[in-house]
Image (tube, rainbow, N blue to C red):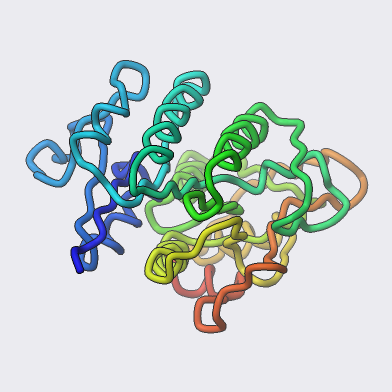
Amino acid sequence: MESKKILILGASGFIGNALYKELCNYYDTYGTYFSSRNGYKSNQQFFSYDLQEDDVYQLLERIKPHIVISSLRGDFAAQIQAHEHIIEYVSKHNCRLIFLSSANVFDAYSKFPSYENDKTLSESIYGRLKIKIENMLLRLPRKKAVILRLPMVFGNTSPRIKEIKQAIWDNEAIEVFPNLVINVTDDDKLSQQIHYLINRNKYGVFHLGCSDLVHHEDFIREVVDRVGSFNPIYKRVFTTNEERYLAVLPKDHPLPKNLRFTYQEVIDHHVMG
């Protein structure tokens, strides 16, 4: 059987690059990059792609992937148009689309954690963008669409960890949300989970976060403690006096035990590696 051909849109970003490294030894994996300063130009598996300038359909016809993983960031209107073209391609070819969505599709519901079949509703522009693209995917035949809702993603090279380190060096305040209850993941765990879903030809909606919940402030403080013995400044931001949840937990599509993890594991093994 021929190897699955995978195209990761946004493979030069933090999550996209972790996925590329996880999958490239097992599948015929391609990626797109926006900026050539990271040396992607010389990699035959990488293609230059500008969300606002280039037509993704042409790229898809050139590579002919069996699976497209969308980890795109950038202009919202351009993202919507790109996904319209991706979905058009997927509907006409032997191809599936894996879309990296976000816990923010539930950010208007704050009283409970969210599960796969809960109705989406968002107060943020970012959450609404993800909902709009999710709804586009839901019009595809069921087996062609995979929606992955992610909580906050951490890891050595993650933007969030870089920001925290920078704030410490610059002696600036680190924002924490004491009343916000979250779950988290990291690039390694997430990549392994997505690899499993591809390997098993899974489809539908999956919530890919740790299996337990933690307060944002407690999590960030523990992360900072791992950076070293500093006296960081914290700015405690209260958006509400009650506990607010931004957590995605699995109910209908749980993953195997070996792919489940706790927030403590994210802190212990990956955040500061």
